[in-house]
Length: 183
Image (cartoon, rainbow, N blue to C red; front, side, top):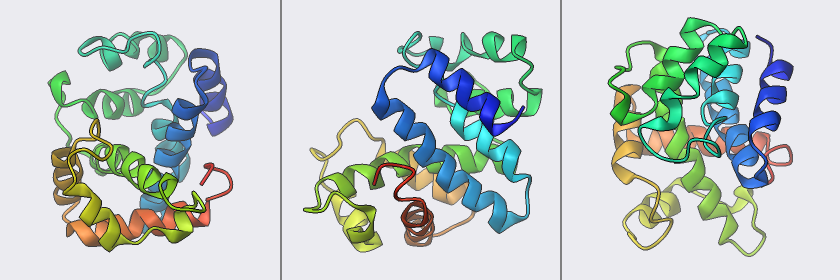
């Protein structure tokens, strides 16, 4: 599966511009980790793009992503990618064993939180976001309340990283792709 094919599936099933942007934001961070770890960037990009492709048709746990997985299988998406997508949901029962699975989980909630931090800046740009301000905002439970702080912390730990280093890494990746990801 190529990135272009993954985008076709995303656009077929996801009409919300904000969900499409989320997929691209997660892709940006995950792809940066693929380069960092010397992994297959295309596979990691496809995984990130497709991780929430079924959210509009299956918005509730445990339907998402479990009921989306057979759709991806029918479209020829590899077992490696489907497993990583299943593992990003804490309730799926699929453990996060591979580096791809850990990176997807680590970048999902954090990229959304960084995006929320950028959107409250006067310029609405990720260029103004700093790791210290992200960590400070994480303490404010009313800010971006749907984002799991526990998942952000556990995601960094799953990659063997300090939280601040993980936040910094993702901010840098998102800054480099700011125009493409809408920030």
